[in-house]
Image (cartoon, rainbow, N blue to C red):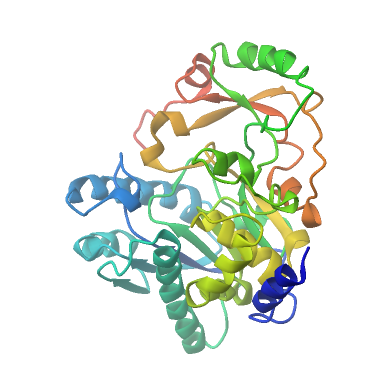
Length: 369
């Protein structure tokens, strides 16, 4: 890459000198649970919500809280966990606080509609409160987990099950990106396996995520650098990190232009947090090889409600791993491979409304638990 690109990345690197530490979580860890951002509704993402549907937003919060209690709080009985909550929804603040009883909360009037700045500022304020609490308690939390208000869990996040890492993101695999592939002989047999597994036309097979695939959805990415395809996409619903590493994410809001410039130089101009978190991992932390996937897969074990049934999937035991093409673009430090790990790569997933998912999805407990 050019000297201009190198210097842009070096400026980010100077924000946080030194490598983040590795950590092996255990059953009795102390964890700060950080919730941040603006709350949307069951149908609208937060960026389109104007605050005129408070009851719909309350439904999102109530359901999210139920899943957090069931799949995070109750499954970690030996861990010490405290909530820190920031939102851009002052009209919902008391409702959120009654459910989560946070150690700290603040609910401010929205200051910007720019999504990365808004989310980054909200996250930064909550992390600042965590830092103050750590000083009061005389020691840092072992882990800090940060997620958006509308994140719903359908799989359990047990701290002791996290592999040793420098930080963790949700597992995420994507549909194969066909752009630029001349040999498509693998498509027909892959589709045959998919249809047989899902008993329907829907469904997909799991490949490594490419930034270009998402950018093409909005007519962008035509000048994307070769190295950007596999290295600048990470799920932005949730991350978990040791305390020191988590606090470095405050830099995104305060140095937004440095991140934007580094991304622009590889052809990424979309203001999506996926790209900014990726740039943070690579150029601020230098931790691509230390990233590991949480035992939760986006859209399967984690989901956001405004995507509806189209956004949720269920796993099958069918795989097309042996058929998927191998592309030549570089992967830094195994980054994309870690986020779509071997047991998920190639796996066929089916739409939530498919016969396969409806047949395999268990009902709730008959006693209402």
